Image (cartoon, rainbow, N blue to C red; front, side):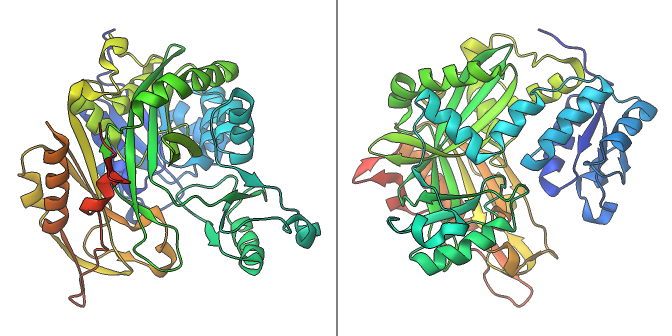
Length: 437
């Protein structure tokens, strides 16, 4: 389907740094782009790239609808923040513009309690959890086996999450997680320290396509916080089993809530080759895997989402043929460079990395002059640079990732190396077996 979108006017809700990727792609597609949020331009990086910017809060539905009508926008989209999705649905409904999901669907998939219950109903494997009642804390925590993971039921970006080794740590973590929950709901899950995978889905006209499954390589490289991702490798060796055993149940789950368009990621722990879901996002993903999919399979989920915003159609012809979770026998990757707290003076090696064979893009999340604060420790906000690439073999991919990591240097204003330890050869195997196909 060829959609005429050149000259269409798109309003982006939220101007955070990663939203610059949305602005660039929309410009590439020939759109006029506006960005709005309550922040002044100097605190909203995407506004600097946009054709127009506004200081209207994304949660002020009436004001945003008024803006859309006065400025004649053809579509609206939000990016990488779960909490904005219900507001986005309300705005689209009030303004009469396309919305890839319903408010009810968003409210299910931004609430861990609700989507975990839905997964259990349809036999989709998920992480076991404990019911803890603060009013009966001693009684309801008596049989808990530690360690456990405590997290808000409705937050994202790794905010409010704590690993607990005993009851006193659990008590403190419950109060901490509650501070990050908009609904005052906290989950206590069994903590599983295993390899991870992320499952990516693309939806079009009520058809559900498994885009790919990637190994999510996390690293215990900081004390007192959860491990964060240092890279992704695609496709994962668990893909075949997922397709045969889990995918039919997931599709039934999607069908039960009426999903038609959009995209979704599911973060999982890998236990005995099975993907146990612990987090879901019915939205764009910060891992920027759409760049990997464009290079490997010839379709771009971000571009599809932008087309939908202004036309009501994802608009990707022959998606059934293009959507190949095996990536045509090739490999793709993402190197995520984490920085410890400190003020960034320079990031060395980016140009050299961009010239390496197979590198697709290098996306900077924090520029020189910006600071990784102590409050950002243990959050995905520590990711300072993402490098995406492709390779013909698993060995070529692994060597490229290690070379990239050795080339990049993140240096503080005091001359200290800020880059945390990243991916290493042992991360490519589980019990001696390759995590890649």
